[in-house]
Image 1 (cartoon, rainbow, N blue to C red):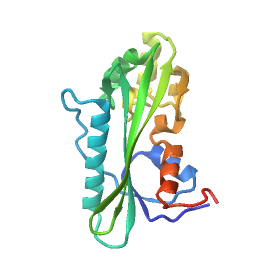
Image 2 (image 1 turned 120 degrees about the horizontal axis):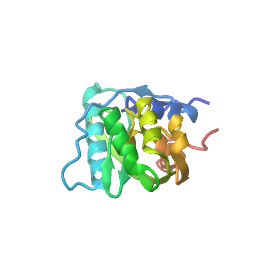
Image 3 (image 1 turned 90 degrees about the vertical axis):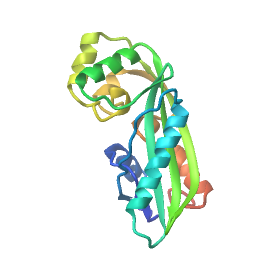
Amino acid sequence: MNRALNLILGSASPRRAELLRGVGLSFEVSPADVDESVWDGESAEAYLERVSQLKLEAVARSLAAGERRLLLVADTSVVCEETILGKPADVAQAHEMLLKLVGREHRVMTCYRLAWYTTSLEPICCRTETTWVAFRHCSSKSLLSYAGTEEGLDKAGAYAIQGIGAYLVSGIRGSYSNVVGLPVCALVEDLERLGVIEDFPA
């Protein structure tokens, strides 16, 4: 099953691309390059909505006017005690992030946006999904060893639940794919609700 939606994924994330391919959605990739800095005092919800909007606008600017296309952008953050953890700059920072997460529960939040684009943006959906993830207790040495694999350097919160980082996760409440980078169930629900697809996955 391969659905031709004329879909543009505004993300360079291989995990998001893999999730879309996994449910049979065809797409092209047009990565959005925006400033993802967190503003002082900004809540996780406000941050995700702002950055995802910046990504949507950046993707639209990169496209030539023409046939109608469906744009999809997303931004994911790990939130621990109201602190937004983005992507670590290096192994040392990854270790620091993991120390904050170990032995407790944190939130993984993804905000995605859908919009039609021909000559201008026609926003049709903005949704934020939250998954609660619990980390087991483990030693600082173990966390440093994991950080040293560099698996988490390009991931919010410095870990990959779908990789070696699975050894840290004692449980989740909510969407697993949301932790990977895109809440697939919610996305398909919205595509159905908006009439973009019907009778999925037939």
